[in-house]
Amino acid sequence: MAGAFNLLAPWRFVRFARTVQISQLPRLKLHTTSAMSATVGQFNLAKTQLGTLKEDPGNQVKLQIYALFKQATQGPCNTPKPGMLDFVNKVKWDAWKSLGSISAEEARKQYVDLIGSLVAAEAPAEVAAQPAGSSVTYNTLLVSTQDGVTTIQLNRPEKKNAITVEMYNEQIKALEQAGKDDSVLTVITGSGDYFCSGNDLSNFTKIPDGGMEQMAKDAGELLRSYVKAYIDFPKPLIAVINGPAVGVSVTLLGLFDIVYATERATFHTPFSQLGQSPEGCSSYTFPKMMGVAKASEMLLFNKKLSAHQACVQGLVTEVFPDSSFNNEVWTRIKAYAKLPRNSLALSKQLIRQTEKERLYDVNNQEVERLVERWLSDECMQAIMSFFQTKAKL
Image (cartoon, rainbow, N blue to C red; front, top):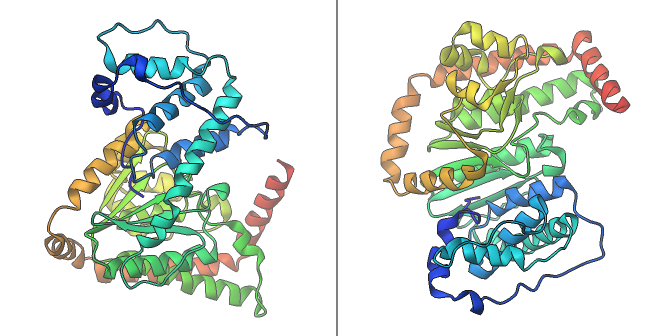
């Protein structure tokens, strides 16, 4: 979902500050509650959700959000009052000062509640934003189309957007839908602090009636279809990496046209650690992008890359400061969406067409090898060890 504005950017308040006298600014009326205070995780999630808002909530609410954020992270206002002619900072200082001595915990709770109410207020608009003629609903994704951009947002933040079988199927449907709608381009991003933590390993605990062989076969076919949906996607496809990325969410990045990442993102493909092998066509795209040696560090030896390392090696297009990530990225995406739709689609096809058959072959080979791996004692022992280690934590 498009981050329509950065609520902490000072210039957003300039017009408001110049037209309102400080004495006219009403004291913020904040709801207090005796409920359990918000956790740091909930606070961080609220910060991320703030960037998904499409409607401007108004200057008064933005000031309230700013004040609560400052109180939650720095405590009561203890900075000198800005000068009379410093309109912007004077209004913001008054908003923060008006909170008095409420605790950081209480401010954090009110911040989470306020952002939650703004997100909830836009929920009906999300349904209306589904592409015309679509009756598809999703349990693990948030899908919307606005201003020429279809956004597919992984939406299991409590599980770090780990991919279940249901999420695999829903992403395939969402990509098929996005490929046919009237949007100019498609964006994939995550909810919460993570972009995606890879496969939900609980998938391996659900053994069908046909036993392990049937499970491996079904999983292989699902993965084949999933990767093929990315290979075949007809429009520009942009990844907005809002946090750490693991496993298949990393290996697929070679099939995107642009990859933008926040500076706190990391990229990790721990396949050999789990007795498995690469997928997402990464056995081909990674050596091509970064060279065999660097690709081997990631795919064979589980090296985790920072966002800046991933950018240097060609996996990421550009890295942005976390504080301005949503604002900068979505400003660019909205500009791209104003370009001629057919021209972009046809140009992408020219760029990608020469390698399409090669990618199909790589996808098939990787899936065949993974099915073998999933049925191996080595893989099962590695996964069992993972669960045992996790249980001890």
